[in-house]
Length: 263
Image (cartoon, rainbow, N blue to C red; front, side, top):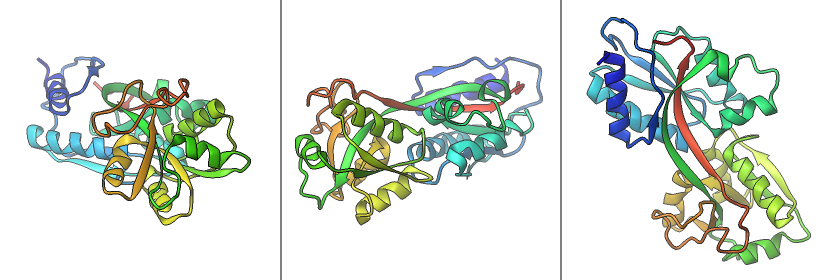
């Protein structure tokens, strides 16, 4: 087996991935012969960053070369994506991608890179539902009370940026429940959660890995989850479908891409 293929097979086994797109096998020198730069186009602490650091740690151990996570947030995750799209196609610059990158071409038609032409998909690493969370100090105890509170007013809802899964979750909830809300976009999930705990915004439809610890610690209250069934991480949190909003079903995903032409 070609070394590049062998190492990525190891990656998939290490993180429990669900699928891998095949890499084009070519004659290459032993890979990797130096450190790898793993660009995460979001701030530290969010779903994409956490997943990338898990992968980087395991691959650093197995490859005997450093896989270094480099957070490059900005421009709705396009800053980091553009950086990788224009990097050398030698396998030493990686991009952490999410559903956000699939949505961005529709929101930003003048992007300086093409997701299809300038990048190539390597691996699908994980999927994650989202959770409607509020500050634990709010009097809202469940989804019914949240919807009642939202009637006739515009609640402030945070997200990790325009077109990100938390933003899509806000829009999905608003459309299904016929709500108005003020969207407050951030550069990532962690800054939005910090403001939710600080009382600057009123709710987030947050990626599960980003909010679950805060829910378990009592800093946030989870009202409903966007998966089809309840999740083992928060088994007491009902699905939106259980609560009468069957259309509010959404899963984020994270994966790995490299510059087009990478062997």
